[in-house]
Image: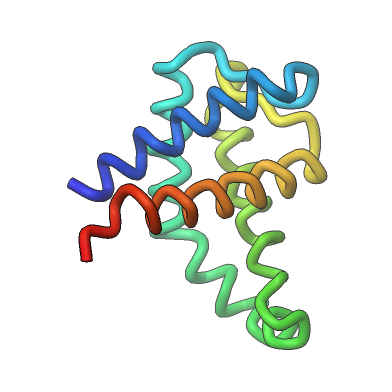
Length: 116
């Protein structure tokens, strides 16, 4: 259930980011945002662990900050797999999107989803 809530939250975040950065991020609609969020979660399950292992030395050298770059790469992969319904203008915008989504997800999980 938490996974589905996370997908909906990410879809809402995609829509908000696309609304704020109109020229840099394009989402065709909420259905496309849900599809991009679902695809991003699948990529985070399948591809992200491989990237983390391959880039472990640089991740340790940057004290974990390179994980934002890995998140940006997964957003760019989502962009390329989604086609024209989800577009990110470049890697810099994907990096900024990953930073915004990470901070927003952290705040949402700490305030809304933490029942302890």
